[in-house]
Image 1 (cartoon, rainbow, N blue to C red):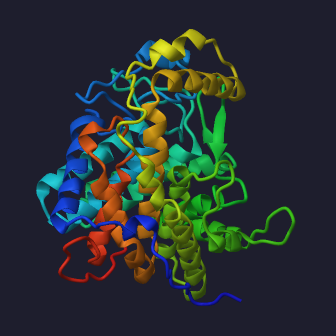
Image 2: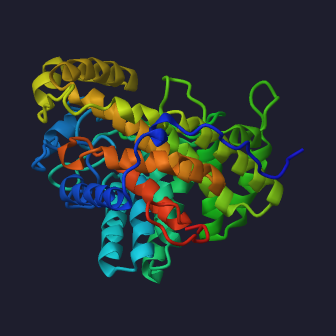
Amino acid sequence: MLQPCCWRPVLALPILSLLLLPTATATHDAIESAHREIWKRFIDRHGIMVDFTALDGTVALPSPDECRQGKPNALGWFQPIENGGMFTGIYIDAAIQRAIRTRDPADEKLARRLLDGLLLLNSVSEIKGFVARGVSSDGRSHFPMGSNDQTLPWFYGLWRFWRAPFATPDERDRIATRLRETADVIAANGWKMPAEQPFGTRGGFGGIGFDSTPRRLFVMKLMHEVTGEPRWQAMYRQDLETRDKTGNRPNLDICERGMVFHYDKTHNWTSCTAVAALRGLWELEEDPLIRAAFGRGLVASGQLAAECLPSAEHFDPAVGKAFENDWRKSMMPLWKPQSTEKEAEALAIAQLQAFMKVSPRRHAETAWIREPTAAAWIITLCPEKDLIQAHAPAIQAMAARYDYTQLHYCTFFWVEAAWERLEQLGLSAGSTETRRPSDQ
């Protein structure tokens, strides 16, 4: 039987929070520095986040011909427009929260730029339901395969803007239309992500497990809210009770268990999208027992993510300093045509190994910045304020630790998303009031 949401207090704070904590001014200045660098170097002219740049903002974009030919690989992995759908869809949450907090039209304008970017990613292909990873210099050319990791944040980001208090009726209508068109195609496709030929599909939400179940349920639930169509609610309620292949665990139990790591020691940076879906489910669900189960899943996810916060201490800007902005030098000598997803993935992995030899900075930033900052955001998605408060000092110490002007990868952006949620709860450094948590 479902029970109300509860959790065991975290008695031992992460090691990072026991270090000398930064002043409120230092933490605030660090967040503002991160914000400036994101908009200075990592948001392209279309409102889409790119993965990496040189420190002067130079981006080695794949050309339109390279995108069409699957160069460096047809998946689009490990080049600058690899994760536009994913990162933009997550970062718009931070932009919206900031605009709500500041009530500054300039911040609303930035959020709208990201909205434009998300809508563009879903309009550049003739394949309905396709969400591109990013676009080339012509503003349209793209790689033929997206993924579930790109598509779920696309849904999440548009839904967040649709709910934003400053969204106009026209914007809400545009978003609703695009969400309906895309969700209908994906659902009819067995929850597989459409891809361009010769690949057909690539990834999906159709599995049973934490990487699929919350995402699929969330899309159903948000579509019911946005469209008001009863069919989405009926699909959602039926799916909640669907059991795994053993017949033992309904999908609701998978959500209640929360985040799990299954393909690497940790992968907060990809699992955070499933946690965001779970957060959306918690906000949307009206049944108190089901909502409590989602809440327990968020608490479990936050507790697991918190174990990764101290890894930020391993980042040493003097180690692994070499960075190569031109991915072509090491990756393109290995290129060959690909006709299947498996061929593209094998090529991409070999190319990554070659790229890492000349650009060890990638590992330093992805391991010791990408993982702990994504973990920080996961913690702040938890509905239990006491748990977030227990880890707020560690999150703030981590945020103040990095020099954002010297980072090549955008994957520190989660610190701003986490900070905005701490601000919302009155838990950021220097907060003088406690605010009621918002469902926005």
